[in-house]
Length: 355
Image (tube, helix red, strand yellow):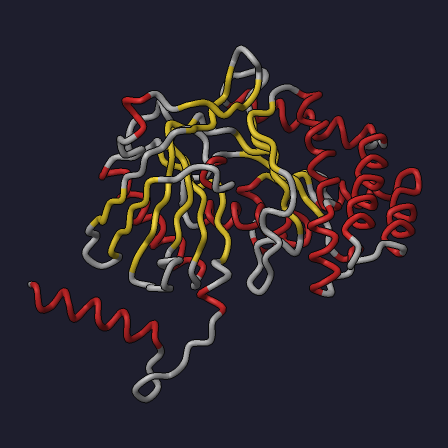
């Protein structure tokens, strides 16, 4: 079984090896959606890592005596397991293979210590019917071989955060059946970034694309620590409704400190829209294409490169099934028509009247 699979070589058929998030990146590439390049450290690496030094048996023993109803018990189990994994070493042959593939990625851009994002991709993550997304760690702007290897291990150990352990227990997912892959993906030096939904997350309206964004990296939007700009785009007539917010904080890379920091947004940008109209419309077009490709509503993370010219500055960095409105039962209304069909009919009727 392979230790490494590049995103463009592994889609949904490799779900068991690369997990939901990385498989989705592979599918986006197949659909000709712009995705920053990178590769998956497969679940085979995770399995071999746990097999070494009796880690697997130690973890199973700790979990067997963990009380789901006791917060202190969960947190202690998580702390002990993650410490065990931090102190263990990846097999040498695996370290060498990860390092050589990272070097190949760096050589493509002629940057020796290429900045990358290290993201978890669990085999039960980002699947319809489950909400595992966001339970494992992500590390941004990771540079150099040693840091890449360290963060990959930390990503794997985040499968055992107290939240992740508790959720699997509540949902009846056996711990040993959920494996984790890790994505190593070129960072987008983002001028702005955020999320978008291929339906309105407030009311479930499938005729709209809703885009939320902020200056800098998307972490402030994903984590909810900023009040992002919001743009609602009608899928049919592509008209934009704008709600530009007062944005006070952004997430950027600080070259002096050598890491990602939160910093105040300069006053002149706080009430300025973080993306331009042409970028809004291009994002909405990509959202429609991604939804059509997957055949279900999507929750997408995007980024806009600060130096690339439009439209080559726009990237999708994740896409997962929307898990709230899309799982609600569509009640037949007026015969066999669903609420979705009626909303789309209404939108199309509105166009005919105005034309």
